[in-house]
Amino acid sequence: MSPKIRLLVTAGTAFAASAATAQSLDQTREYAAEVMADAQQRTSLLGSSAAHHSQFGLTSADGSSTLNFSGWHQTRYTITALDDNGGAQDDFETGFSTPDTRLIFDGSVASPDTTYKIEIYINESGSFGLMDAYIAHDFGNGTSGWVGQWTAPVTRETFQEDNHTQKIERSIQDAVFSAGQVQGAAVSHTDEGNTWRFTGAFHDGANTADTPYNAANDGDWAFTARGDFAIEGQVDDYFKTLRKVGTGHEDAMIVGGYFHIQQNADQPGSSDVTIIQGGADFLMDSGEGWNVYAAGNLRQVDADAAPDEFLDLGLIIQGGYFVSEGTEVFAAWDCVNPDDDRAGDADPFNTIAVGVNHFPFANSQAVKLSAQVNIFVDATTETGGLVSQNTNAGLLTDTEGGQVSVLGQAQVTF
Image 1 (cartoon, rainbow, N blue to C red):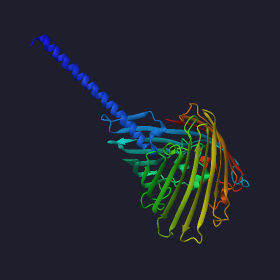
Image 2: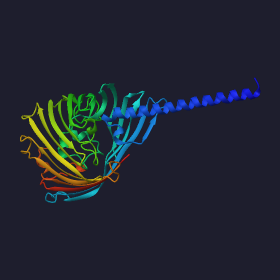
Image 3: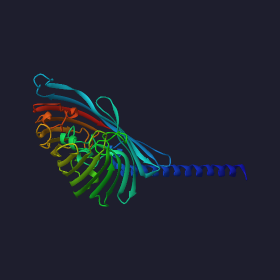
Image 4: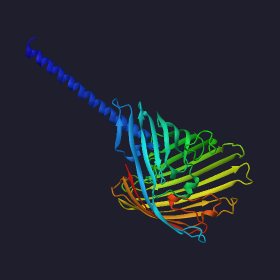
C-alpha cells in the first residue's frame, strides 16, 4: 500500500470514529434529557424540583440517574398590636424574621421510575431540620408508592408548598388540624385521564417527623386515606397549590376529602388516646383570574383517662382575584371551634385576613412580594388550649382578643 493510500485510509478511519463518537454522545445527551424530564414528571406529585422550576441539575453519563437542586427563602417583617394584659406584656411588637428557608435535593436513581427527595429547612432561629426524606417508585398505570418522611395526605392547605401559598402563612385552623410531616409508607393511584386520585398511607401518626420509633409522641399505628376528584381540570395540577398564578390557564374545579385515625402510643403512666379526624375541601380556579377555596375539618379525641371526649371543628373560606397578570388581592376567614367540654368553657377562635401578592415576573413565582393584615378576633387563652402562639402568622398569646398583625414578605424561589 502506497503512503498516500495509507494516509487516506487512516484519515477516513479517524473521521468515521469521530463521527460515531459524536453520534454516541448526542444520543447519550438526548437520552439523558429524556430521563431527566421523565424523572421530574414522575416525582412531581411528591414535591420534586419540577414543581419549583429548578434550573440546577446533574445527570449521570448514561442518563440513568439525576440530581436536581432547588429551594426558596423568605424574609418577613411583622407588626403585632394586642392588649397589654394590664401591663403583663408588650402591647406592640415589631421586627424582621426569616421564617422559612429550604434546600431541596431530588431526582432519580438507576431508572426514571425510582426517585428520591431530601428537603432541609432552616427556621427563624437558624435551626436546621429535616422536612422530607423518602424514596419513591412508579409502578406504572398511574400507581406509585413511597416510604420515608413526607407530608400526610390530610388537609389540602398543608399540601401547598410554603412558597406557593396564597396567604403569607397558612390559616390558624390548618395549624390546629394539619397532620404535618409523618414517617411511614404510602401508595397513590391516579386514573389515566388525571381526573381522580386516591392515596392511602400507614404511618406513625400526626406530626411525628424526626422521631425514633419509640418516641413518646409516636402512635402505635395510624392510617390515612384521601381522595380527590376533578369536576373540571386535572387533579395533578393542584396537588401543591390552591390556584395558579396569573390568568389564561384552564379552569379547574376540584373536590376532595380524607379520613384519618390513629392510636397514640401506650406509655407508662399515661392512657391510650384515639384520634379520629375527617374533612372535605373544594376549590375553583378560573382562567379569568379569580379563585376560591373552602374546607372543613372535624376531629374527635378520646383519652381513656379523661371523663369526656372532645369533638373540635375547623372551617376556612378564602379567595383571590388577579387584578393584573402580576398582582393578586385576596381575603380569608377561618375559625377553630373547640368542644364545649374543653377547659374553661372554650370559645371559638376567628381570624380574618386580607392582603395582596405581587409577582414581578408574569406567570412565575420566582420572586413574590406580599403584604397582609390579620385580625385575630378572639383570645388564644379561651380556646381550651387548642390555639396557641404562632409567630409566623403574627399571633401572640392574648387574653382579650382583637389582636391585629401586619405582615410584609419578600420571597425568592430558585
